[in-house]
Image 1 (cartoon, rainbow, N blue to C red):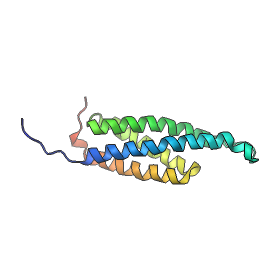
Image 2: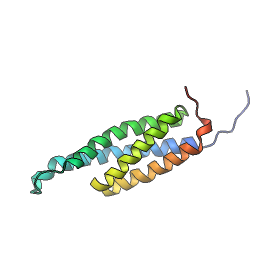
Image 3: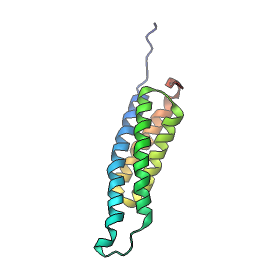
Image 4: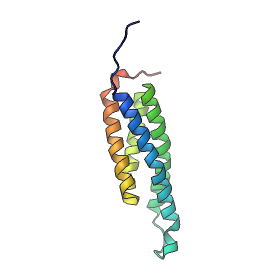
Length: 126
């Protein structure tokens, strides 16, 4: 068996994606809480888009976590890129609801998708 040198890009992309999805979970929970508690402070009816962002963030957490694990295992590059892109879309939406967490999710997702795209030859399609 020949010893192949494996680039660290999938490892970095997978770890960044998992960290980004771990930031997506509290951001989603926080935006669901904001949309639920909006009327208690006298602001009137809650904006439905913040609730949508929270639900979308929960789904993006699941896809981002799965994409990060698949990136670490170096399988299914299409799903990995789809999951990281889904997480990136969630980060863009979370900027409106929860500014700081949305920016962190966006930065980590952009770096994750760059690292996954750079290492596309190391993936298998099992």
